[in-house]
Image (tube, rainbow, N blue to C red; front, side, top):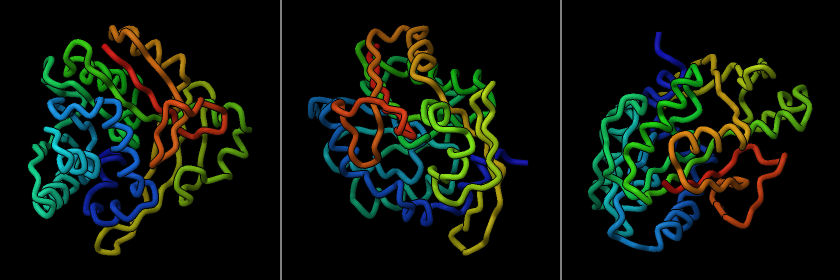
Length: 251
């Protein structure tokens, strides 16, 4: 049986591109460009690139981008979109836990829970960060968005479950205060209109955990902010009302 994060993205590419959380690409790429100081010589790795929305937009703006994802279905759509937009992006089907990039990229990005923090164990999630670190050149930058544990810890777990804050179609949630893992039943409809029901398991992280992970991987600076889709900003402090956090780290 496939893990839920693999099963979800089978024949889901066109539906994915219509999801509300994928509509902020331009604003997000504007922020990424600013973090790169608009230097078109920078080489970028997009981990968990999905249908390539960030990778393609960056390529349109003149950057060299490699996108990796577990889902060949998502990558097939990404390649179609790159062709439609007359840009070249290297899209490769790879598992972020098993990468072999070494000091190749100026920027590694993992946006919208592209890979981290969906894995079954903390060790697997850490391995993804470790591989992202290895892929970066000295002084390279990591841009990561991930689920913030401050939200469910501050709000009562009952209220957190009932908000449906993630996507509005999750049910039967159970947030474990010992592991900071949220298990839920997710109902989705694929590109052919077929419904699927998935048992999801996601890890929420505290800022201190993320900082410790990245410090142990020799990142020199680690900045954490509140995350608003489509409007990433260094001027937005992380609060208990932020469902996600934006992490920017430099090796």
